[in-house]
Amino acid sequence: MAVRKYLLPRFFFATCMLTGALAFSFAAHAQEKEKEQIKGVLAEPTDAEEVRAQIATVEKLKAVVPDRGAVLYFLAAANQHLGETRKALGLLKECVTLREGFDPSSDPAFLGLKGTKEFDDMVAAVHRDYPEVSQARLEYITEEKDLVPEGLAYDAKQDLFYLSSLNRRKIVKIDAEGRTSDFVPGDRYGLLPVLGIRLDPTNGTVWVDTFEDAGRTELLHFDASGKLLGRYAPSEGAKHGFNDLVVRKSGEIITTDSLNNRVFRFDRRAASFTPLAVYRTLFYPNGIALADDDRSLFVADAVGVVKIDLFDGTSRDVDPGPRSTLAGADGLYWHNGSLIAVQNGIGSPRVAAFKLSPDGNRVTRTIVLENHTQFTILPTTGAIRGNEFYFIANSQIDNLNGDKVMDVTKLAVVRIAVVRLP
Image (cartoon, rainbow, N blue to C red):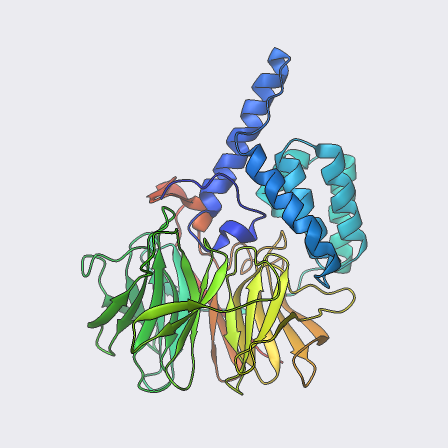
């Protein structure tokens, strides 16, 4: 897949096969700037106009989004990309001062700031507030090193996991003993890179999202044996990127569209997609979760989590409260009144649980489950099995540039870690 011009910040490329591409892009951009500085000329990035348009839109969200830190982090990354380092540092400092958990230490957007006293002091302060939390253990590995996995789902009836692959464009099964096999082989059905994957609670069939950066996307339906039951794509010509999905008790599918910045309902009878109304602009909608009431839908994007009432159509941001952030959630899941999130869009990734108020409108308690360990190098998504959360610990998406692995010597076995839920 081609490298997108610019996506903010790490969250924007963590699940759409672009982390490695963008990290490479940031590094290349920094090298070009260095060459231009030697020549005495400092040119703007080619996507400067697009980035400034994003900045203008996000600036307007300051009065709407309850998480000020998320907006500041977004703006800091954007300004740093434009080469406006002093402004970026000021925004980043303001963000870190809020002590919400944003940690720029491993974010490619701020690669050029590493080693400077101002930046390193900020990182040290973050690490004092949010030290290592090591509670997870290794549960499964897959010997295929080049899967570059993105989605994970649990089938309680068969007691097995489904793991989707971006690079190999297939779906793998992992049984209770850790044995792996192909559920849908890569040479069957001509799949696009496979992302979100969920079980249909009505019949145990499997639904998956696939898309490539050029803007082609499909929602696919498989039976329990891996046979394709249906494939569906938007009919109009805009670019779309279905990323993650939920399946309601009625069988209705709701999917995030990361390239079109929308959330779609899929009508199975009409085989058509209808956008859900949301009260504010979404920026790379990604993780999605459905409460047990089958009514409250939670959609994660770069600056927070929006709650949508599927009965009356109203929507609002979930208030994370002080010293907490819901931003940058790649994987998002509902569990006993809490949201479980894999947050790889807040700089250094972490896994966290957010206990919600009875109405689901605000966070009452934030519990960091895993942080700064071997299992949070680049996690993406997960699945809940009982009172435990299984998650992809090393997606290796940062080694994927478009449809090619950049360095095969850096590939490692895929690790699935598990942590007990509070």
